[in-house]
Structures are given as structure tokens and as C-alpha cells.
Image (cartoon, rainbow, N blue to C red; front, side, top):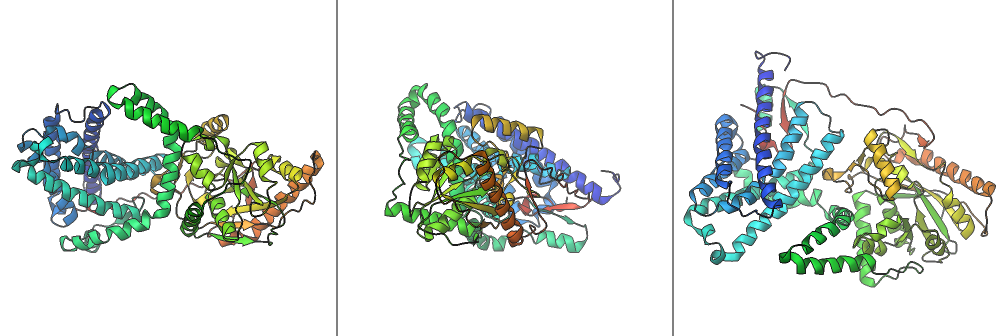
Amino acid sequence: FGKGLSDPQAILRRKVTEVYLLSSFHSAMCAVFSLQKILRGRWDDPKGCEGMLCFSLGYTTYTLVSLRGQLLKDNLFALNEGAHLIELLSCLRSRGVSWIVPTLMSAEIPLACLNALRLLAEVGVPRSSTVWQLCLGAFATSFVGIKGILLPAMLAQLVVRGAKQHPELHQPAFLPAKVACLVRIMLSYTWLGAMSTHWRPHRRSMSLDRRSAQAAMEVAPRLSELTDSFAKIGRSISVGLNPSSAYFLLVQSLYFSGPFSLPALLLALTKPATRLAGAVALAVVGAATFWPIRFEVPFSRKPVQSRSLDWIGRLLRNYFSFRTVFEARLDPKRRYLFACCPHGVMPYGVNCLQSVLRDQGIASQLVAADVVLRIPFLRQLCRLTGVIPARAEVVQDALTWGYPNNVTFIVPGGIAEIFLMRDDVEQIFLKNRKGFVKLALQAGVDLVPVYGLGHTYLFKTLDKSSTLGSILMTLSRRLKISLPLAAGRFGMPLVPLKKPVVALVGKPIRIDAPVAEPTKEQINLVHAQFVGELKRIFDKHKHLIPNYAEKRLYFEDEEVPARLVVQTPHNDTAPVDLLFPSSLPSRL
């Protein structure tokens, strides 16, 4: 560690790293054991379970002995480790319960991801790196999915089945294990509330004096405050996992689960036990995928659908603290094509602007990639919000609709613009995109430039400057669907960070009459007017978003400055984990 074993801080850091390495080995072995059982469909096979219980018991005993100083000061840590020890001992003493061990051991899967994050922090890997973001996403997903949903649901199912089907779970020797498991589930929800408030593991330096040590001990609540801590869970979760986040998670699950559902259903058809259920599910997915949707007429919403859409719009606007700046009033008698930049991982700012127009009585439509409207269930949700496919004939029909459907949104940057996105630079793909101008001239609709300030802050992405980013951009353009490597809130790929967004709506470029076959000169003239107006509103209003005042707008053919890499100074001090304060020893 650079200073030798005589330095107490270096010794402390070495011991902390050793504990992390041992914890990583234990959690990785438990995770592999559980996943091997579950993926092979033999999760209730007792083979090897007693050996894994003894292995985990040895590690837990070592933890209790080596961290005895921490146990006396951190009540949550002591309660969790003590409950784990009782759970293991009770399982070993009980007869016929070894088959439940893989289910219990699955709780170590998110811990393996957390230990990977801790080790990355110890070796100095920055939080902005791709490796950190991937580990963070894996940890958040596994923690919420396994400890927050799957494990409690599976254990509740076993309890509901009663003593007739599983009498071994109701023997007196197994009672301590059930109580200990319940305690650990409650602690998981407590830490889940902490994670919803602090979505990434923050770290701060702590010197080894008494004042800092006392401050570190006060991070975790005492046992007397445990009841109050549980009372705050709902408020904490409502801050981090609010209805807006639930909507983003729904969109993300539909986006990714749709394409992967077909192989899973086909696999289910090959097994007699799941053949009927697989056939029914395949029929439902097939109907959701191929059920015809009419795009040649405006979407007619029922009152319930309209109220639901208004509610979703308000959620999004509140989540992004959304504001709009209109340079001119919209004339209900005229038709408009709103061309929006930048695209971002997902153009959530466009959805917010659609909600604002809906309050003004305008039911707009948004042009999206055709493949999005081929994903089951996601296509129904998109159609509810007014999405139409990016096909020339469909867009041309939409541009002929009158009030209240007289506004059509398009994002000309498309997939290529996603891979230009960086949080330190504003760059858009527009100089070589002139098809939307031709559509506006042919339909005789006014062209409106729109810029979304703050979009580049919503996700951490891998842009095309990296080798992997360039490969993903090529694949995305070939497959005509965005495949960015992005991380937002909780490390999720499609859940944006809670950052402010401002939509700048420029002055409409008036087109008095349709031009059936616009010339190249006409297209270039209108395109130049559009680019000039877009730059004007960006420079005029960019101060509305923090840290935007010094930014300038770049285009795809312009050289952008190199990404600034912030070097974190190395500090030989003991770290404090504010996400899970009771899991990191402050004294060994």
C-alpha cells in the first residue's frame, strides 16, 4: 500500500481490502451455487446443500470474530450478521430442509455485485467508468429483484402452502431460521429504502481520530432507532422509486423483455410440464405483436386513456422539473412539424412537451423507429402516447391532419445522434439530415426547431469515440434499433437521472404552400434557416440549465474537445460507505 505495515492507515486499508476479497469469494461461491441449481431446474435438490451451509457458517463465524469491534457499535450490522448465523445453525439442526438452501443462498447474488463495487472503489476505479456503471446496474437490479421481490415472494409461497405439503418447515428446530429470515428481509427493505435515496455508493474520507470515528458510528441508526428507521422506509422508497420511476421501469421491461420472450416461450413449449402455459403465453404475445394498428387516422382515445395519459405526462414533467420556452404562439389553424434535438438515449423531453401541448388542447403525434412498434405490448403503450412509425407515407398522412392533431414531432438525429451524446459536450447530428425539411415542404407545414436542454445529463453513455461505442453504433444503424450502453438512475439503461430539462421552442419557419417536388436549393435554404434558429435559441436560453452557460453547440462534422477525465487523488484513509454504512467496518 505504499507506506509499509508501520502506517496504521495503510494497515487498516489492507485489512478492509482483505475483508472485501474474502466476502467477494464467499458471495460469489454462494451465487454460483444458487444459480447452478435454479438454472438447471433443480433448485430444491438437497445435494451439496449441507456442505454449502458449513462453508457459509465458517465465513459468518470468521466475520463475527474479526469484526467484533464493529458489532458492538453498529446495531444493524450486528443484527444482520447474528440473524444470518442463527439461520445457518437452525438449517443445519433441522431435518429435511436442505432443499430450501439454494433459495436462501440466492440472497448472496446482489452481495457479490456490491463487493465488486467495493473492490473497484478500493483500487481507484472512477464512478464514471463503464465497469463501475455496469456493476452498479447489476447490483441495483439484483438487489431489488432478488432481495426486494423474488426471495420474499418465494418464502411467502412456501408458508402459504401450509404444513401438509412441507411439514419439515414447521418443526421446532426450524423456527429460529424463519424468525432470522424475516429479520433479514426487514433489514433488506431498510437498506432498499437507503438505496432509493442514495442511488450510488458514495464514499468519503475519514481520518482515524476520535471525532471522525464517532461521526462514522453515528451513520447507522441504533437499535432503539430501528423502529423509526422502518417507519422511514416508505418515505425513502417514495423518493427514489416514485411512480415516475415505475413508469420508466415499465418502459424498460417492455423494451427488453419483448425481444427475449420468444426464445423463452419456445423453450417452454419443448417441456411437457410447461407446454400448455407456453402455448397460451405465445398466443398472447403473438396477438400483441401482430394485432393491426391503424396509423392512417389520428388515434382516438377513450376518456380513461386520456386521463391516464395526462397523469403520466404530469409525472414526467414533475420528475424532470420540466419547463418550456415558446418563442412564438402556435396558430391552431396551421400545421406544424416540430424537429427536436438532441435525441438522447430516450427522447423523454419530447414526451413532456407533448404533455404541455395536450394541456393546450393539441393531441400531437411522435415519429419513432418502425421497429419500436413491432415489440409486443410496448407498441400498444407507444400508440397510446401518439407514436407513429417512421415511414414516409405514414408521416405524410399525419402532416395533413388538422387541429387538434396539427402538431407532429420528429427527432431527425436518430440513432446516430445517440452515440454523440456526452455530458460535457452538446453535439447533434443535423448537417446531413434534410429529409424532414423535404417532408415539411411537400406537406406545406411550418417547421419548428426544438432543443431540449439537459438531455445530455440524463444518462451516462458510451459514445462513438470508444471502440465498443463505435461497434454498438454500427450494429444499431444496421438493425435500425438503438443499442446504446447507457446507465441512468439505479444504473438502469432506460431509467433517466432526475435532472432538470428545458424545452426551447423556436419561431416557426413559415411554409406558405406545399411544394410537390422541392428542389435541392429550396431544401438547403430552409435547412439553413432551421439550423440558424436552433443555434439562436440554444445560445439565448442555455443559461436556464446549470453548467450550460459556457457550452457551445457542435454539429457532427465539427471536432469536439477531448473528454475531461477527473483524476481522484489517492488518499490513505478509511472509507465510509454511505449506501450501506453498517456493512463497511470502521474499526478492525
